[in-house]
Image (tube, rainbow, N blue to C red; front, side, top):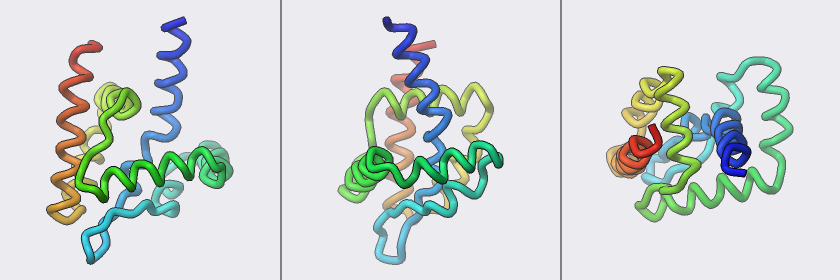
Length: 127
């Protein structure tokens, strides 16, 4: 039971966790999702899969919910975000996430940093 759900969560984090790399801040300070950036850095086979996935209602609802949280000045705080952090740490990809944070405006960047630090604290409990 738990092993299957954990494996599913990890697979989802590996497939869709890159959404954070596609978050951008507008001049007004709002955060938005760039589909082009999300698809740009993927391998060709994964890119083909994600090109279809980004048009699914479930994915759109997921992104809209994340943007709603971020644009209210909060950070997503759930098991999915924690799993993304774990996957990035294992793969050594935490650096690209830090670079993305640096590219956001201060307000949005602070939200993302807060989200990351909360996830790191929780992820330590899983290792």
